[in-house]
Image 1 (cartoon, rainbow, N blue to C red):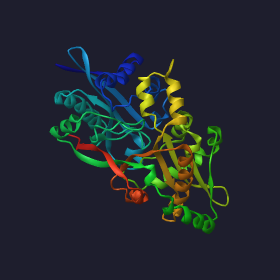
Image 2: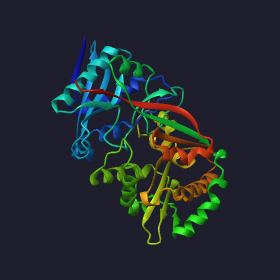
Image 3: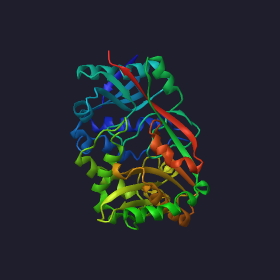
Image 4: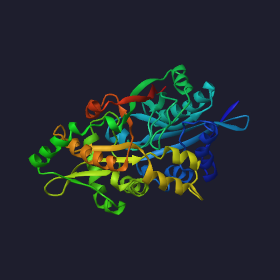
Length: 373
């Protein structure tokens, strides 16, 4: 018999976060989160996402053992301001037993119905800055800090339970040797002169902070038209600043400013922390921090995390300036491989950016949806 228990204590939340460590214990491809950070991100008293969202967490038990988990999320900005009557779910993990998945998803349906919502979609987080989708292709590829990994049977469970594909995403990798400067080095000089622009580089994390509010504004405006976009509040922006700026290698942050020093475009790349996080096994101390710092300085693989350009500057070649700055830095650092995080398949603009660099799609993922009954 399958029993569902709501997580209401810190002990329960820790069990919720640690369940995947058991499920993927022998996986060479799953990248574990930092346990303490994951708990904080799901703590209503810590994460300001809860100012505009409700979330309830559930664990499924069978024979007194945890066999599944799920987060049931309502983003009220999405529901009220965007009139998207969506019941979200995320942080979904389960053993290969479709009955367990059924029980977990029935709880999502129940909460959605009680709140007069119309459909369910997931796995997703609170916003566009959270992880998204289940893996459907590329199970033999190592994950990343910004994605969920899962077993192949997840998609089978959803389909058996009447869920259909909602949004599809691809993840691509590019060998740095294939990113040829001839595609952007000359044109970026012309674009700088024509629009009176300049590139801004960094060597210290603290120097990035004064620009972060502008960065989030550019991000929001540049992504507003995407089908998955939901605005984030000011408290969330402050939270993400504190949470992520320290993970950045400042040399991998590139900004473009106009003649008045206003930020009009940016690119953020992170060193690959995948192998470091696997070695850490979810723990920062006593030695985990050392693995992170080593990866921050010496990783030869990087992950493109965020890129944004103000709408009025899109299609004007601003990304050529950003790519040119990255190319110079990557050459100096001896970078060998560039990984792109999940990108919506219907985001044609982002795919056009990379077409000349011989990208290889190594992973695919999607979200699933179902009408609430």
